[in-house]
Length: 177
Ligand code: ATP
Ligand code: MG
Image (cartoon, rainbow, N blue to C red):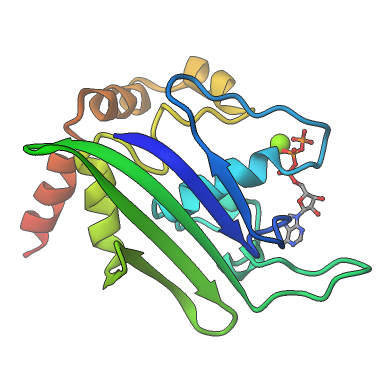
């Protein structure tokens, strides 16, 4: 799967709509402290289904919504759209994954304009061997974490890289039935 574009509205410090083209190859984000580098990576993870508020550095999930500044009022929703491309039987296929959260109303997902469950988004990325915990998304503290990982954690990283993470999700589903 290739990530092609990220669009943010009202997400953390990105109060105004921001549009980011992701070029092929390795992408690095640089800029002064506090400019929003980590927020960008968190937006990407959030759209892929991240549900741990703590890993998004918040107390609750609504903390991803722009909270206001001295000069700008807070927003009541945040929305992030991710355009992804995959190789299908008839060539490259694009999908737009959108996650939106409103104060007091929780969050919802859409794939190509259709309302879907969180699980559908989870499976889409798991089948493509990527997702919010993909080893392809490297945050500032991640490099040390890879080095210090326990063998079971490292196995999960290898399984994701090998593209079999989707099988585990389906097995857990089957076992739960
Ligand atoms: P560093 O180089 O220090 O790691 P960074 O570029 O990664 O910095 P971020 O952590 O992405 O910066 O952004 C921090 C900024 O985002 C802070 O100014 C913080 O106030 C702002 N911020 C975080 N959450 C919100 C929110 N919900 N509403 C408004 N601003 C927010
Ligand atoms: Mg940072």
